Length: 239
Image (cartoon, rainbow, N blue to C red; front, side):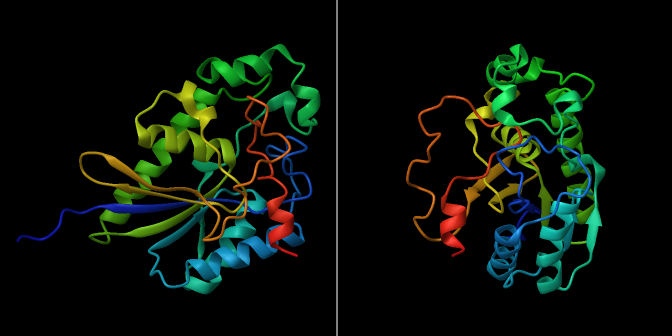
């Protein structure tokens, strides 16, 4: 049997909790740091990944991602490399507003039901976010394959950005990406081969049943723009 075909294993990580996660559409607001729970989440994730030899640890340039990635890099012995292509969506005039106030905006229904047509006032379209994020992943895959036969690397990014990357890997239209949940400090694994990607793990927050019980918002058919807080299990699991 010949040598296996080259492939890239991408481990997508959403940043840990902040004081605004799920309540405010933080976007690219500066000075948003991990809170106590988020810091503990990042440390726990780093320990889960500690047995892997990582070829790179890549992060969105925003602080909450850099801090999450730094926890992984410290354990793995890597440096954190920044990538603008996986930065948070520029939500424009929606940045800094409470999520509950945004649900009354006419654009909210477009974001929910036809996201490929949604452009945030004064900001980006979700289609643009998808294009730049997927392009960044492909560029990193190519670069790493030039250095290793089967590289494994971490990318720490944001909820909507990761959902767009997953939708592309699944081969589904961007209009379906609101069916994907990406919780804080969750792990999503995609293996990229020469012919197609394989989604191996999605929104994995650990080996327990925490998070499987319905959250208060479980009856709503709307996705939380920006990704949401992941529900009360985040607080309970860190007590």
